[in-house]
Image (tube, rainbow, N blue to C red; front, side, top):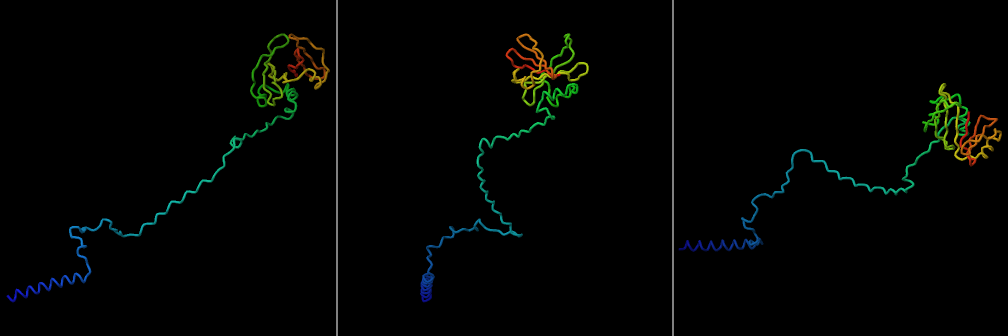
Length: 220
C-alpha cells in the first residue's frame, strides 16, 4: 500500500516537473508540425560542386551602336555622273573636215575610213560619163555633227579615194559664195530647177536646189 502511494507521488511530481520544464523553455508545442507533415527527403535544389577550375564568366553582348543618320540624297545627287571624254581627231579635221577629206584623195583606201568616220551608213555604185559602173560610193555620218553626212567615192580599179561629197545642214548659195568666192562657171541648168556650178580657182563643184540651198559640195 505504501509502495503504490509512493509511485503515485513520484508520477505526479514527474508530470509536474515536465509541465514546468515545458513552460520554462517557452516553446509552444502546438506550433510543432506533426512528423507526417515534415519533409522526409532533402530539397531538390542542391548545389553540387564538381572538381576542376571554375567556368569562365560569360561576357555580355556589346550594345549595338546606333546607326549614324545619313542624309537622303537629292535627285541630282542620285543621278549617275557621266563624264564626257572629248574625242581626238587628226589635225585639221575638226577645224575644216571637207578640206581634210579632200587632202586624202588619192591617199585613202576603203579600209582607212572606219577609224575616223566609223562604218558606212549605206553604199551605191559610181558610174563614168558613159554610164558604166566604175566604183562604189559609201555614205558616212559626220562625227562632229557639222554636216549631214559625207560620201566617199572609191575607184574600182585602184581602190583609191577619188571624190568627196559633202552635204551641208544649212547653207545657201549666197553664203557659199561668201565663204569660197564667186569665181565659178556659168550655171548649168538641171532637172527640178537645180543648178550646177564649178569653181575656177579650186577643185570644187556645187549643186544648188531651186530655192537656192546648197545640196552638196563635190571635192575632187
